[in-house]
Figure 1: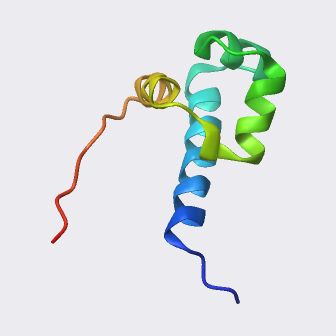
Figure 2 (figure 1 turned 90 degrees about the horizontal axis):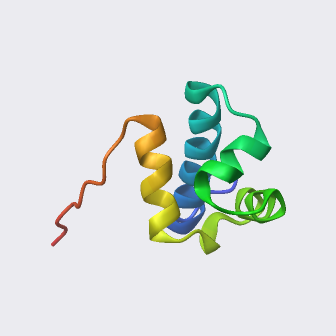
Figure 3 (figure 1 turned 60 degrees about the vertical axis):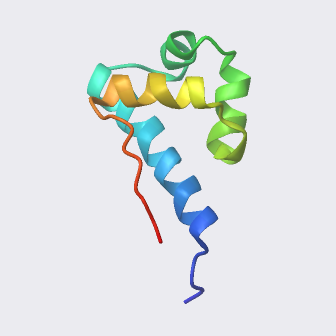
Length: 75
């Protein structure tokens, strides 16, 4: 099994966050894209490659899932 890089794990986390936001709020793709203020095609692009998601959209996803940003200090 191939070991995932940190970037790959983070992208997977964003994909999970998108799905969780849909489930927790009973949203389909179209309504979630409206909540994020983006086109459904852009949402599909972000699901395929979450690296392009903006911090603003990430904050909306966190709010929809009841999560918050936590900064972790590393040495």
